[in-house]
Image 1: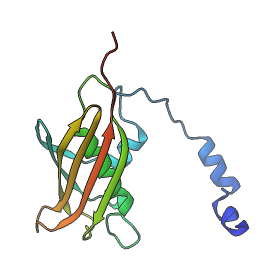
Image 2 (image 1 turned 30 degrees about the vertical axis):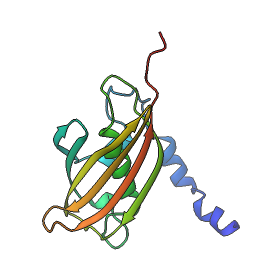
Image 3 (image 1 turned 180 degrees about the vertical axis):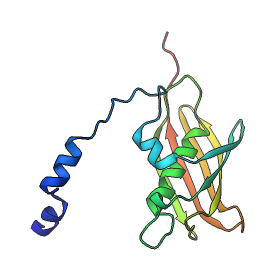
Image 4 (image 1 turned 120 degrees about the vertical axis):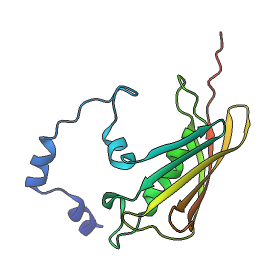
Length: 158
């Protein structure tokens, strides 16, 4: 455990670099955050209908593992973000993820273009269920299939 702690502990130079970072506070909706720029930059929304969102995403090097493949965490993030977008109502807070289940069926490499399709499976009260498919746009191969459950109780009590 001590070796892990030493490995993760920043050295003096790293500490100084981090302390000089200027990270402005984030106001939702005002501008994109570091997280959004890092994880979602490059996603393109192609189609939006009630209960359906279709996006295109070219796999960037920053989201790949050491083998140049789209990292499983990046896939989980795309399922979370696009699955949440399909049930979002403009002007209301985002719903909270309750559960995600992802089947990783294949891999995607740097510069592969993916089609991400999210559909609402159903709603009951504040609970929503979505399905998210990630496909290689060129080959049609299914990369991952996600099921995403969300909750949002946005009804006014007035």
